[in-house]
Image (cartoon, rainbow, N blue to C red; front, side, top):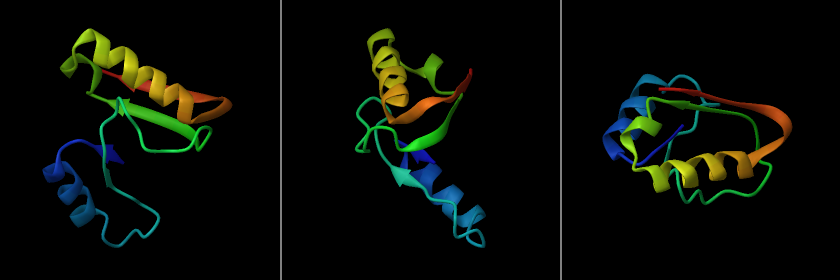
Length: 77
């Protein structure tokens, strides 16, 4: 999970303490500090409607950048 709010990161870490495969990282969705083609899936949940239009465009571009080819981006808003 990536979130820009430390409270959300802390909440997930507490809930997923028994699941070592779950990672929570404090990061801006529009400027991901991640390599290209890193993930098989990206899920954005209740994110885009909170952002100004330009930030939404950058967030979607970053999500596409970190996805491996021919995989899924799921956004629910």
